[in-house]
Image 1 (cartoon, helix red, strand yellow):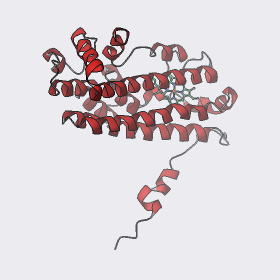
Image 2: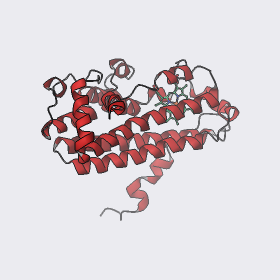
Image 3: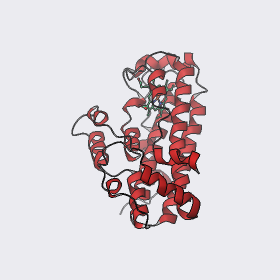
Image 4: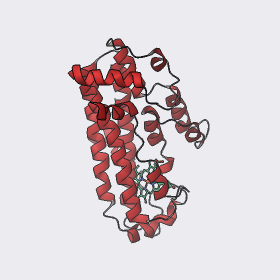
Length: 262
Ligand code: HEM
């Protein structure tokens, strides 16, 4: 007979607590925080991807209310992701330097789940896939998400089924390409904002999502600036300068373009 299920066996607590392995001599006190916080981020990335897949499925069957409810959950997690940076900012530059060299070339830049998240939101790049070993989990997951419709495509498909005249070119677009602004879609969105409270709420949640990701990028680059200044990143990029270049481009440009015309 199987042993009785317990808190520990269900959550695999022993395995979980065995996953933090500092590399510095000593080890340095702050390396534990650094490892734990990154692992927590990866778990939240996993959960967000799980929820985004649900939003897409719900939109595909026109379950607008539940899609919106799920979007709200994603946004609440995003807030936690941003807030967590406060904890890391309690680590001073010297505390970080005490173990930074032991990170070698490891960097958040190599987080495949962060790239998966970007892919689901429309920021796709073949180059990003090729950084991972062919045949591995990360490569396969990114390959799959590369060809899948983004959350924006799921939303446009939903609007078409709701009776809006979404152009065929938008519904059948190549989903591996970047999301580009469209005057026809902007006209539809303006009409939704003016006359359709149910769907304008979904638009607002997508704007929240777009803004939430930007907020994370902004807070991350500020944390990087205060921790390593203008040093190059362990992942080999220009560091803060590279990160700043990723801020500002909206995920869903049409939702921003219309704001001054409402
Ligand atoms: C002391 C703390 C941290 C420092 C100094 C730092 C530094 C950097 C730097 C310099 C980069 C640019 C790529 C490179 O050359 O390495 C980067 C990218 C990145 N970091 Fe951090 N990071 C820190 C904490 C975190 C945490 C806690 C996460 C959470 C997962 C994270 C996630 C990422 C991601 C996803 C990227 C890629 C961003 C993009 O390409 O747009 N970082 N980080």
